[in-house]
Image (cartoon, rainbow, N blue to C red; front, side):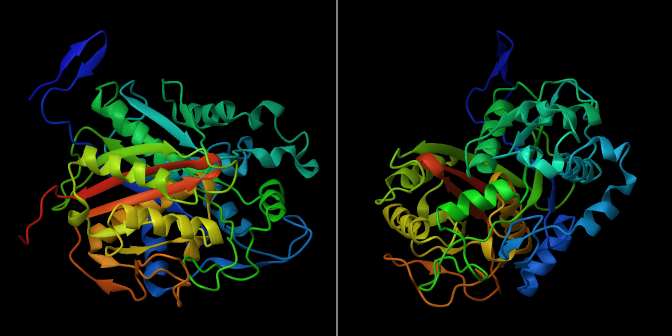
Length: 404
């Protein structure tokens, strides 16, 4: 069914245009590509460790941080690498890897770049980075334009900055733009660094764990911040010749406006985002095979999620949090964890929720305690953040089941 065009926008009649995930990349402390990261997750290894480095923070902190030697080695192949900040370098590396996996031309007008982040180049405000780059590079739009110019993309990049749902929200925004026919391809890349600014902020909330985090566990005591970049290329065309394809079928966001930093006490906001995402995907709660949750390991976030999932009648669906492997990567979290969730679908593997041992939330949940094989077709990915924001997207493998 061909879409009609009016006022420069394609109107989709009848069935919605399927939006395909055609390439992805993850850069974290666990590796510089998706395959490396998923291998470490499958082994149950974590990138979270105790960093005693005054250049990061005055006191030892448990974080997931990319080693400078790894980044230095990776950027050797970049043109004029020193002209870019560390975060910009990571964005460029991640996007470049994705482009090598598919045949799209990033220099064409039908391809857009969306950057998701919470703080961007905020580290440039620190004294030790003074005068290294123009002060304008702290502005998120300026940072995104550096990435755009590197690849010669003709479109002004879009920035999505909405606390910790930025990555998931960016995927939903991209899906909508593609379904409207405004672009053929959208490169969605999310990233953030572990900086003195972000560490000081979370320390002021007393939200930092003094050990590897334990999402949903009775003894959880806070988050581990992480850094990294995740990139997904979404397209209106099924470019891959693989036997199984992944589409993003539904998405939604909501805001419960409970508190500037504290999540809802009822879970209503996240429940609303889940409900709307499932409705758009034409998917019932019973059809979901797996849930990739936000799971920060803070007391109130995990409690809120348990309530939201029970409202959505999803308490029996296998679920995990990837924070125990890579920490909380802020604006990158929704994208990195979406890629890991997509890998679960492709590999038919449920990965253990690292750090969980004893149930510690008020509602029952089916938390994955051991990595296991299982036929998977539909997955829900959620995120929640400061200011009461929530987002959810639905990924589908091959669109239909083959075992029914």
